Length: 363
Image 1 (cartoon, rainbow, N blue to C red):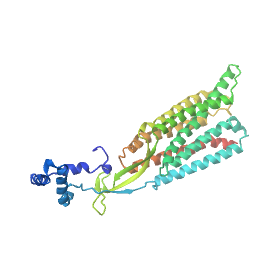
Image 2 (cartoon, rainbow, N blue to C red):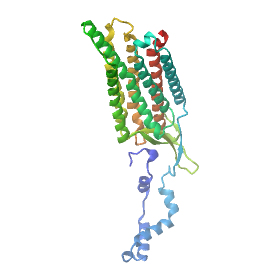
Image 3 (cartoon, rainbow, N blue to C red):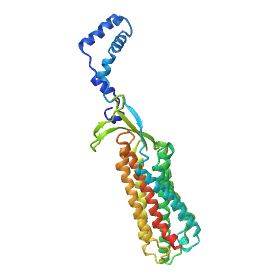
Image 4 (cartoon, rainbow, N blue to C red):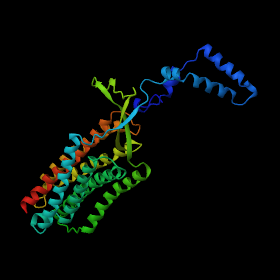
């Protein structure tokens, strides 16, 4: 019990520790017990103790009720903070930008640059970026039973839909030109490429289904003692209500019981990025510049790698404070969600500018 956070700790231990009965008071209870019939009457001891407590209730309250009780629970939302407002704005801009670039891609779909880049693969990448942008928005709004699950699904599926098509496409181009150098005929079916993308996405989909069934992220409450003044280390004078009890602020956040569920997806995405980096490096010698996207893809992979690593650090160092035990500062939980939202939104906008911007400009 003592391991629980102070804001949620029961006053029972303090009550028992502070409660002492003198020898005279004990004799008083025993005399009443004797008058009640002693061992010859059932519940005589209970009646004796209850009568004694009723007669001394004022004294007991003054010396045994912990000083910080009764406590007052006050809901407090951190979702109006500047960080989350900015993150929500950037996420919204990212979604609008994805929709705009998708419209431009469809409008110029018959241009050479779009044909060489494989329009259908571009649509898949754009759908992934749209999912990441929507996840950024859900991270920046107050949590609900729907948003807690949806934002994880959108972000993890989004990164898979962005990275898997790029890996498959670059690998197919590498094999095509490698066979051409050996004067061999290569036949690559588009349906086979789509099956490879589907397989990579299916791995994430299975993981998300298991996560949602076994230990889904749900809305949990964080309780923190409100301080009137603080020394910067979480110590200070506790805020009191008009009855002399402590004020406890409660806030909501999303979390599963086990924290490792949030750690595995970024590691999987880092593996995909490393595979993509190898494939892009192998394609550096392709002579046809219209097929060679090394310059843009290398910058895109480096950018996404940095964002994914930062998200993983947020999960490990800030998300760890948002465990299911309800410990820590309520603001820590919201800062973690806000930083994640900000990174997802910026990653989406950066990817659009690096990979799709030059194509739209050239079309």
